[in-house]
Length: 403
Image (cartoon, rainbow, N blue to C red; front, side):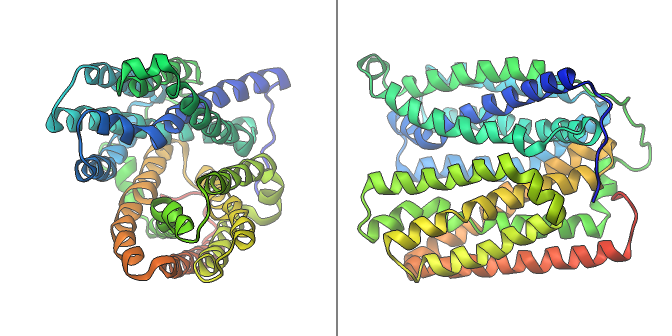
């Protein structure tokens, strides 16, 4: 196991952790508002369900292309903080333009600009944080946990705010006002994170992105991680509908969703111990194994008690997989390619693979109901196979880095 010995004074490290934690809190503040309420904004502007689904689908697929491109540019320029601030400001401009926008084409275009710009910030922020993990010895999980905490607070608080009469007078723009406020906080948080420590790397014949693309082990890592993360798509898209079909009340369903995020928070907070014991690939294996159990049982063992028990596994299926993947990238990708690697991983796991699986998830749920989760269990199993192959390859090849 890699142990980082930090020469950074405790006070300086605490200040660094605070700045990075504020960044994760700010970006997930936006996610916590937009995830439950952006469809409400779009519907309030006259979009029907089909048009709303097109907006979300277009953002997912555009991210697949844009995010890796921005990551590669950030690596080449070695100006990740500046790039993050430009992206945050671009999103704010698009949201401001949305205030009086009307018509599907304009709403689609401006939403895509804002959503894609903010989505591209996340892997850049992760690359900055993982540089601090590698160089300063900070605990990634205890920084990233504040994003999950803020997500819960934002989702609950925004619902309470939008229920107030003053928000009702703003109509759909009440949601937009909350997103704008959170986006301004994100711009400030991006300006407060550490700048790049290394000078730009000159690669006249082969860019960092091209070098990563030529490494088969890197693609095996991406495929394995993306398979485990994409196995959540039936849950994300149809979990509430499935639980309603079992007769669960909306209050119970809300508690189940909250339980999963709380379990994720606990994993991030205590994850360094698991990381020390299992290593990054061991964490990813535990996430895949938990996925086989969680998705294999959730659709065939109905009932409230099994549902609550299986929701605890979200700590592993998402939390352990993400924590393992981030630490693996931190240890195996050299600094000059960090943003490219983060962007490719995000584009594949949250974009390409998840988008493809989500397309099939609707048809699977429509034809199989809760048994559609069994296909997600199979996807988790594929992820386990990929991680096992990667571990075997790593044991044969002791090079410290990709490339």
